[in-house]
Amino acid sequence: MESLRFAVIGAGKIGSAVALALDGRVGKVIATRRNLSKISHLKDKNILVTNDNELACRESDVVIFTLKPPQVIPEMRKLREHLANKLVISLAAAISLDMLKEAAPESYLVRAMSNVAILAKAAYTVYCPHPDVPDWVPQVASEVFGLFGWSRMVEEAYLDALTALSGSGPAYLYTVMEAMVYGGLMVGLPRELSTEAVAYSMIGASKMVLESGMHLAELRDMVVTPGGVTIEGIFQLEENRLRTALMKAIVESTEKAISIAERARREANRAER
Ligand SMILES: NC(=O)c1ccc[n+]([C@@H]2O[C@H](COP(=O)([O-])OP(=O)(O)OC[C@H]3O[C@@H](n4cnc5c(N)ncnc54)[C@H](OP(=O)(O)O)[C@@H]3O)[C@@H](O)[C@H]2O)c1
Image (cartoon, rainbow, N blue to C red; front, side, top):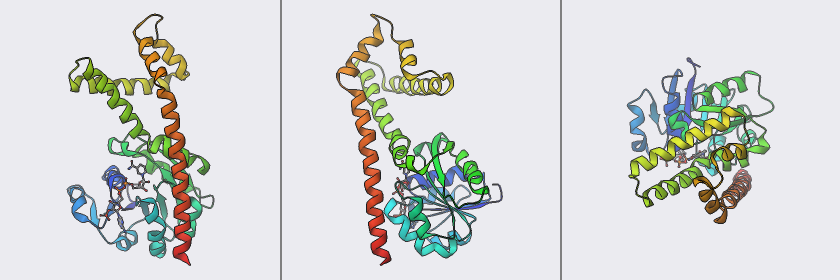
């Protein structure tokens, strides 16, 4: 890893976070986007910035695509010869390994989904290598994603649902957290204290889930005393259908990922003809 050179194509929100997570841990990082003024802060690190995707790919051993989903296939097609025999990772929602393979058939391809917590090196990244890659590819991919936080190799069939669950997940959790912070404000807590209380409770609750091996309902029951404070709150959450709302959010955003993939496939086929 220390000697590998990385290109990050499309250094927006996720791409900039990826470049920063790699910086100092790998041989070299080049980040690209068209509007370079938006990534001038990356130059303060050891990251090279350019709007020349071809140059970035030529100068790299591993290329990570963080473009918006509809841009990935057309851009990969243009760069195909510079991606040959390289590890190419796509972090784009919805774009399947089949589509990636059509665009860059000579590359070692990995489709992955991460989240915004790359910035805190606490992302959860799920990934699926193309079936024809050599054995070193999942190994190197896992080391790369280890720099972002936690990771797990999964079947591709799960990736659209995981895009909804852990890719979009932070946005849902921020919404829940903001609502809890507002609740704290309503009963007179200072904003900072309310935010800190919610954020640390979220970390603690997550660690209990990951480390105790207990079922979520069991963990919740540990907090709920008969006739106590917590059951009053749980009753309100049930009456206002918090669980139904969150379940619907995951189902609808999974459907959206599937429809984005279908549209991207249609557009890619049209552009090829
Ligand atoms: N945001 C998230 O939390 C999240 C989570 C998981 C996965 N993702 C995935 O990550 C990808 C990027 O999402 P994002 O939220 O980071 O979007 P974003 O901020 O819009 O980043 C995409 C970047 O691509 C650049 N770009 C566009 N055309 C380009 C080209 N031809 N060459 C080089 N750069 C180009 C754009 O900058 P210029 O216009 O300056 O070129 C833009 O900054 C998406 O596929 C998304 O599915 C995002």
